[in-house]
Length: 308
Image 1: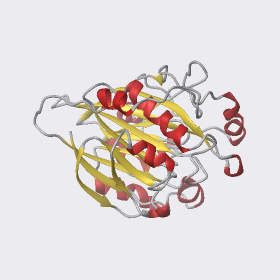
Image 2: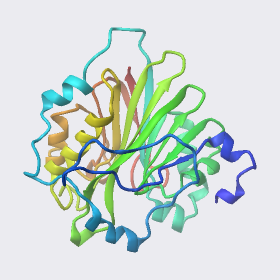
Image 3: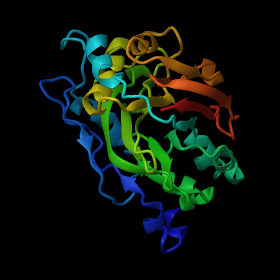
Image 4: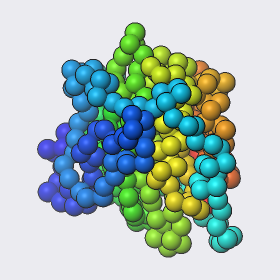
């Protein structure tokens, strides 16, 4: 637990919380007023089951036919624009669903099996799903000496190497709600803008855990969920930034959600666990991919290296 951390932990880890679990929406559909902040604060846990079940009644999510779709040209003109060629920068990204209820709640971290895997992979940036307490993960694996963690809503977290990268912004937005018959919570994307200290290149890194049922796209369907995701990116990414989106999308290749997303950002890599619901999307060239094993989870940790 966080109480076991050394006295200097809050300074060294520089853990930032996302205090508001809902974005601001305009006109009954997703707009560009998204929650974003940079200040440090206390770690937040996920919503209680009661609060999570009540939350969908408060959401104003884009639904089919509610607004004019964001065209792929609009998206690509901003998000997929390119800057003049400079010295290439390799960025190793990781996505990992920790299956928290089993690996941590029931097995108490399984002797650090997941964090040992992360430490050996040594990614520049990672997106964690089903991560209810990223502080615990960082301490357990001794990662807090080298990494900064950002705890997001709905058990999402992003972690990056502190020595090489600095955070220039963060945010999140609710993009979907689980189907009633398999309801756990609303679903979000969270993002960070990372600046490489030496080259000054920026990466817009997005983490997502998609709605249930698998391949349903959630309560409003795959096209609406994909629309909400790409609008969040379009509203917040800056022209010329390298966009890397990772996560457990709860959608397989060929589903409506994935097909819609592929129209905006190329799908770079897909895992095999759970019949392939973990993905990387990016307009950047991918140099290589690696399946690192499950580390005790029911999902594999996946790594991919991109050129920015």
